[in-house]
Length: 323
Image 1 (cartoon, helix red, strand yellow):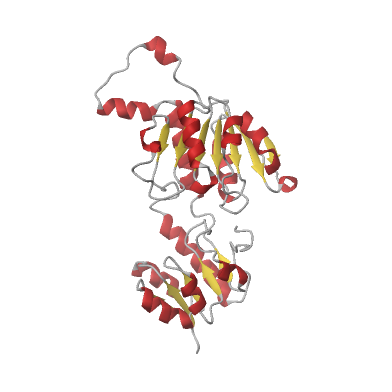
Image 2 (image 1 turned 90 degrees about the vertical axis):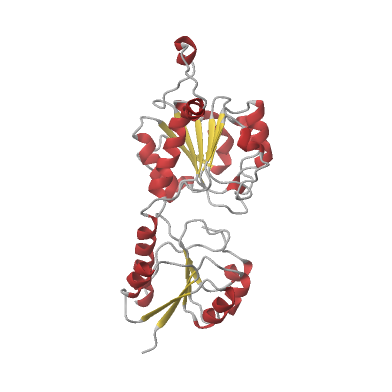
């Protein structure tokens, strides 16, 4: 019996390897983190689960039929050679929607309750005790407007959580004609982005990185935001023009920013963002959870079953548009 060969190019624990193998006796799973060995093994691979990946590896894969990633963002995998090919490409959409939505709400609460400032005060053993001043510094999320840029899997799930806080939800989406949700108060087309930005107290970026969304938020868009509003980015750093954002934060165009992703990662120690008090920085961890790998393996196993049965896979990416 000819087995379907799956190559995994990272050190996935054996517990999960065995779970993948249990899908069918027709599957042969191999893994390697050695680049030269990967180049050799990929020649006969039918399925690839990559972390180590390059155009060279892809071109060496003579019989590859399907690539399944373990994350949601796929921009760093879509080399021209991959896009032009007939290889099916799928991601792990859905795996991070819970932690990312909770991360966003955590950042909003930090800004509204000034927790980021009080963490610093705790380290300095400083007690803030002028109640008349403090009363003017705290906000409530209740009744505020949240603008979500992008209404895919993460954006739509985030809307359901935000509504629980009795906030107004507005959304920009590429497919406005198809947009409907009981959790959204108002939809805007992407061409109306600046109009939406002007209404929001919190702007949440959840779009994929494509040629259309690169530098989507620049000087013009930041100027359209309220001076009391906050920008939160949990997608890709290159969605924002970082230099313009730093200027906006320093000059008070907006009140602050919660940033989980950056133009270059890890964020350089020389970046001015580190020193800005109105910025909350997290090191690209918004999507992480101890449940992450259990969910990823569940997606892989479900898609593997479909693949072996020659049925359409879930979470298939349109490689030309990038999501």
